[in-house]
Length: 90
Image (cartoon, rainbow, N blue to C red; front, side):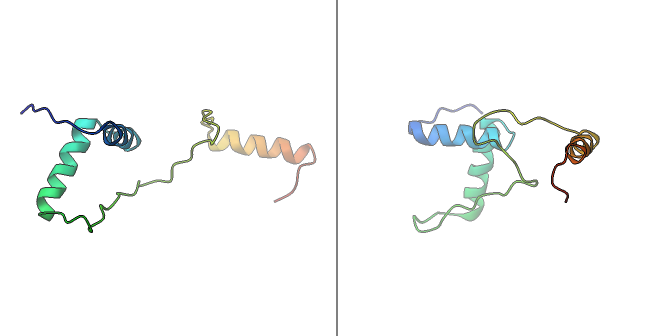
């Protein structure tokens, strides 16, 4: 069923960002949160919402640059090259 809800701009931005970080559509995120809220019953303001942890660690560059996606073979090649060039041993 379709419906319209009015969210404060900041809450909408947070929900949209959370959906993107979790790799899901905003619709699915909101559905999940509504279902969780209904299962838990009425929320008091003192009850903090629990965040779901991602299954794998996520690394992001602080500069916003895209991090290269390297295979294990490429990483070993780079480490071997650095070792041959006089880099620090492990």
